[in-house]
Image (cartoon, rainbow, N blue to C red; front, top):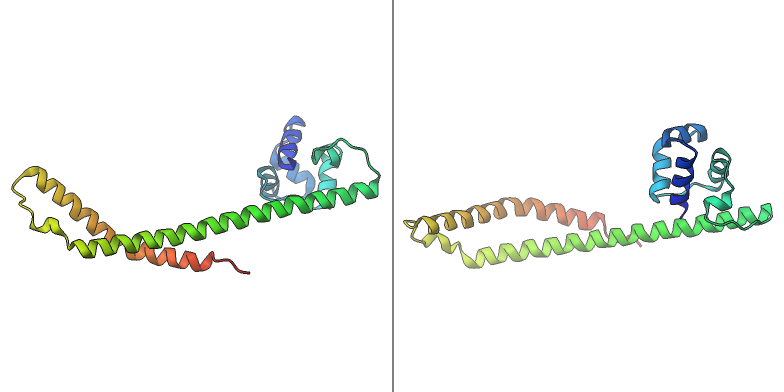
Length: 169
């Protein structure tokens, strides 16, 4: 809502992100984050933004209701708080998804290694005089070699990732 409005109004005024940032005395990346919905301007910047874009704050926030100035500031603060809460929830959800994905990766690697240990490389006893069997045996050996070499590195990285992305409550 806010991010789309900022972008649409900025473009309708013919301003680039860099030009808008210069007028607000901020960096272009901040404007980009606002337009991507990754952050929101604080109330002072929101008011400055509305002045630069010559647009009421209520329009930036998606409303056209006229209110008194004290009520406007209170409403702006409440809406920014809601937007910040939504961003925090989205970040927490992504963090939790990454955490469980890394745990799943650890489990899959351990299961694959256990299966390889149980099978004990049966392709080593195959008759490689047949070209198709030879190609299949080489493919199995390459896959096993790659997994045995890469799995410890991936597993270590995934375990570190699990600890770094655990819930800190």
